[in-house]
Length: 150
Image 1 (cartoon, rainbow, N blue to C red):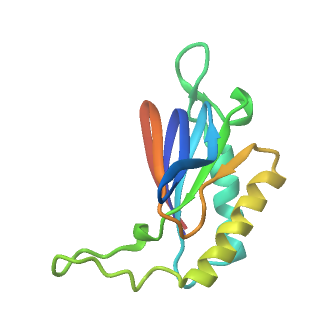
Image 2: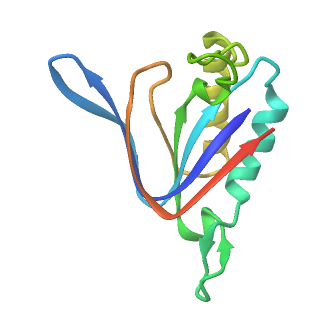
Image 3: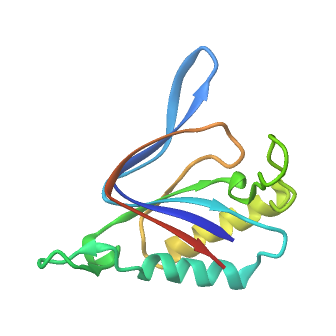
């Protein structure tokens, strides 16, 4: 499981619809945008570890401007977007291989379970739409960006 985490002032995901305005599937203020990818061997252990890691990260400034506060401390939210390309391999050629990405059915189940785990831990969690073409808008806060892998 891989996550590209960005601390944001705000973020939003829209799904484009032909001949119509895109519709918003998720929108947050202060918090983390999580681009999440899964591989074949991912399961419950990786999901639980990652949910705890994301929620426990102290990436927000305290009154002394040190990164000492977690999401709960700042009433932050999460925006979780599926991103199979996190397992893309561009070592050879000009077109990446996605053989390490979990197949769509497996990845969707893992994605939904991960969202459930985050919500069960009391964090407001918004989402993109699994498998859809999405437009992601964000305002980085910092910027602060981390690569998480389990």
